[in-house]
Amino acid sequence: MRIGLVTGEYPPMQGGVGAYTRVLAQTLVKKGHDIFIFSDAQADDPTLSITKTDKGWGLSTMRMINRWAHHNQLDVVNLQFETAAFQMSPWVHFLPEFLRDTPLVTTFHDLLVPYLFPKAGRLRQWIVQRLAKRSHGVIVTNQEDFQQVQHLMHAVLIPIGSNIPNKLPSNYQRDEWRKKAGATPRDFLVAYFGFINHSKGVDILIEDVAHIKKTSQVPIKVVLIGGRTGSSDPSNQEEAQKIDRLIEQHNIQDIITWTGFVDDEAVSAYLTASDVVALPFRDGASYRRGSLMAAIQHGCAIVTTRPKVNIPLFKNGENMLLVQQEILDEDCPPYLHISHALLQLYRRPSLLHKLRQGARDLAHEFNWSVIADDCLAMYEAVLNSRQSTSSH
Image (tube, rainbow, N blue to C red; front, side, top):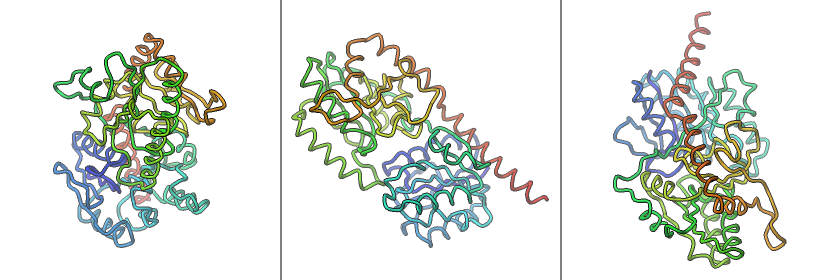
């Protein structure tokens, strides 16, 4: 099959959707398919055919995508939809009209993220739902989004896999990587992985770590893994500055280590060297969170937020600890606190080991080969439906 992937970001640009697209493309190539990428001018991958645009994502680029699809004789185009990655352009929502002869499958990566268009209200909901209805196939990556599109006959749920392979550096030594993270073998090292975004609750983690340091003898250290802001969402920069001020306010600079942007092997090493991975998402744990998928893939002991909807595979106390909003004392803001879960894991090594094994078992559910096969099944269903329609 000749498959086109349209994405607003692609490595070396930093961002989860770009990383997802690269792994999906590589997996589809291994399965014998011809893959063509259409992306931003910064995209680069010598192993794949990439067509780039330096004109943004306006009307002329939509026409360019149609010519690209026709020139490469594509069987199907899969749009990797995330509004921020297309420079907030409304034109990408009308791509089905521009692809005259090529069926479009749209993978929605952020169907329920309101901060992208905070003032758009019903307009944003209408324009996104319009894209879903006009696409020949719809893929969503989590239960929350699936609830919004399950009325569509052509919609399926396909979870994302980890964009970070579980591959350690050849000379990996745990204590050395803990030292890089600012921790000794006896310290309790808590890791956070991902960009600094308000929805991800990094401030919650900082508040709770400061509380633990102030009220206990736990030798806690924190490593913040990865780049701070990414390539797509400018609002992350302001949030990162807030985190800097919060760390300074609590005077805990000595227990916080920022790694900055590092390669996949280094991410793998930091995750593996940590005692716990804390991901206190404000909107709940979800398949849409690539950082959570990475922690699962690496068999980490995970503390995260109870999902907003039921996710049967996420089992509290078995493959992760799920926490809810709680007020510790009047001096603390009414955040979703995670300190009690961190303290529980520090005091119960047996629970740490249980959660790690549970995460390793859970990782089998998010295999990239299965994800690629499910995407191929959607592409084939769309093509078969069009052939059936044209024959009548």
